[in-house]
Length: 107
Image (cartoon, rainbow, N blue to C red):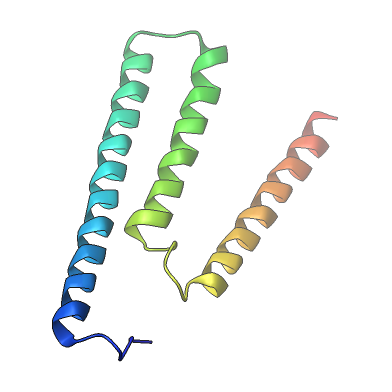
């Protein structure tokens, strides 16, 4: 809801600052994702031990997915609560299914 006590120029200034801050966050997260990708590729090229490489790549991938969801798909904004709940519910079910089948296969 818009705040009607502010003048139109104050409202425009506020929106400009808000958009500028959001763009800054998106640029920072984009740079971080590029950095994570460079780290991942360099670890593979340097043939790092697989016991360290695989968990590190998985962690970097999860962090990149979170950056994608929260900054580029705007999941951090208001009004996305139901969508976030459904996505997290689906992810939880998928993880539990993978753990269940992995446990059944290995034992």
